[in-house]
Length: 138
Image 1 (tube, helix red, strand yellow):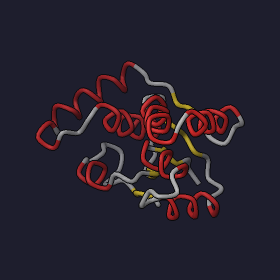
Image 2: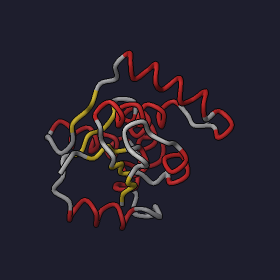
Image 3: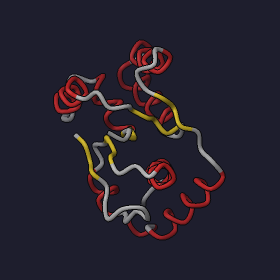
Image 4: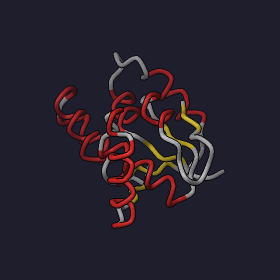
């Protein structure tokens, strides 16, 4: 099965037992054996949220999971940046932000349809170039 791109929300939800998406995300990850890829742009956003709301240990656990090989980090290319800017301009009224735009751009470049996200609005709204729509997980 092709890899899954991971957005910020599930990274936070995994760590916060009070988050509405916690149980769904944890259950999905327990059952899934698919490769997980984190866009490099998602990493600082997730680390910041974890540190700000749950403390330094939660932030460190995220980084440890990457260092330990549980997830890979995908770098941003100049073509991704160009496409992200295009998406931000096209969906400006919907306020699609930089991080979500980069997730879409990377998904298009890598030809991935599956995104692990808690953000149903933005990723349902965007029409990717490489497929009809994204499969949003969990």
